[in-house]
Amino acid sequence: MSMQIEVNGNKIEAFEGETILSALNRNGIKIPTLCHMKKFIPSGACRICVVEVIGSPKLVTACSFPVADGMKILTHSLKVTEARKTIIELLLSNHPDDCLYCLRNGNCELQSLSKEYHVVERRIRGKKNSFKLDHSGPSIVRDPEKCILCGRCVRVCEEVMGVACIDYINRGSQTFIGTTLKKPLNTSSCINCGQCIMVCPTGALTEKNNVALMQEALHRKDKKVVVQYAPAITVSIAEAFGLEPGTDLNGVLNAALRKMGFNYVFDTTFSADLTIMEEASELIHRVVNGGKLPMFTSCCPGWIKYAEEFAPDMLANLSSCKSPQQMLGAVIKSYFAEQVNLKPEEITSVSIMPCTAKKFEAERATMGRDGVPDVDIVLTTRELIEMIKLYGIDLKNIEPEITDSPLGVRSSAGKIFGASGGVMEAAIRTAYKMITGEELANFRVCAVRGFDGHKEAKIKINENLEIGVAVVSGLANAATLIEEIRNGRDDIHFIEVMTCPGGCIAGGGQIIGVNESFIAARMKSLYDIDERETIKVSHKNPEVIELYDKYLGKPLGHKSHDLLHTSYEKRDVLL
Image 1: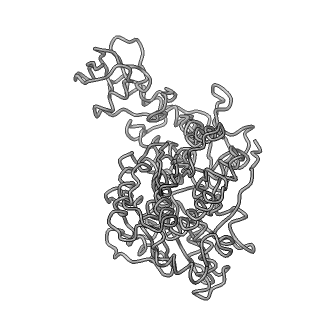
Image 2: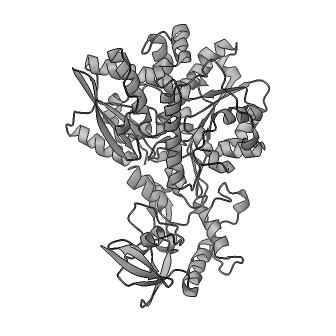
Image 3: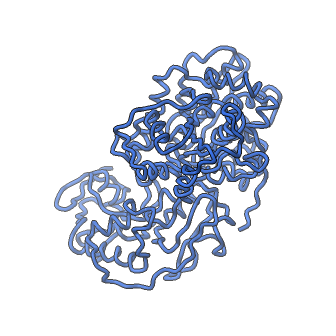
């Protein structure tokens, strides 16, 4: 039921049951928030969203207070703005004064609010926070001194990921957010997904930054530096350089990476195609030979660590395929190394990923041979942007270039890996061809596209075979589906799992603070590429075919299994 409320002297429409904040946002009226997260039950923890309701003796939190017919609200009265300013000053009273050295400098919500509310002097002095920097994990650095107790990280870890590796500890003025027994992050159940970083309003959570390490590697004369970048990367950096969100900068990125000093540049989409060749073959083998079903995808390292910790009974259901990052890393240090007459140890293999968990994945003991890792350095999208700016490269005025060969050609099926449902759609296209000998009449599998956290479809292969597929993103959704399977559900044969809601286009290594329309633009861009490019299936990638002919033999063959597949074991969480 709709109603009218008055905001700053103007009548606006509101709906029964909604909050003041929801009504204001829908009508284009902005008020600050720090703890609020869209689609989550309000917590009212930060109090920065307070407004004045005429007739109420005290200010109310807009994020949690319901509207009422005829309500009169003041959003920026002197009383309100002074209250917000005081809250900001209280948060700053024990906050470190190291903005110049903080990774979030210029993209910090607390910093922005301080400027917006004209906090230009220290009126309130408090005892500074004193915590140790936690850089124990391979992917995420925690700086509790910068935490403002908004609780966003706690909520996304528990409610979206179902991991709950961090929580509020102690009470009152002694409260802080940390792991069990205040131990380092690497002893917790953290899956390194980085979604806590994406929601943190300050620099309390950041990725383990490898930019300095990368600069050093680029200046070494004794090694060749080879770089690969994930399918989502080229459609995820435009807005950082004043370009239209979702703009595909594929050729421009190739040129920029070479200007930085990378000797060879590859698109991980090539190995996404390679992954599909192996994964589709594995699915068919399981279906035909009565193997363990349903089969889960294994592209996402956050999901893999989650399965090792929280669903070890499902490890036999995981595809044995390595992720595209690790497949290409393995091929670069074997086949490609031979092509350019280099030893594996003479190559520095770099990957650029929209994902913090990829840093963890690259350090797995099984991701290399003879003590030589397949991937040496992993950069996130944020670190890539930092490097492009550091090297003074103008993406608006640079001629596009193509990737290197071999390993340079891609299909658009591999490109859509960047969106939730993309792996599934690419696999369906190739599995259909492998089983029937014919191509799908329509390459679009619309049922698995979009941002829904749980999608399902039945795929008719032939008169005798129909495959049930599911796509989930956000591991709380995966947990729900896993429980259904444990309870006897058997109509699903193949499941794609992405840790980050929406897939890699919204990964934990992406630009922080973008709105949903930007992420939607990235997804649209990937599917637009799929529409306009000619090679729409992985099995028609000519350089993938050549790799099998010259080196790997066949999918699931001895050579490909040794190079492109792996195994996983139950992982005990220490705390």
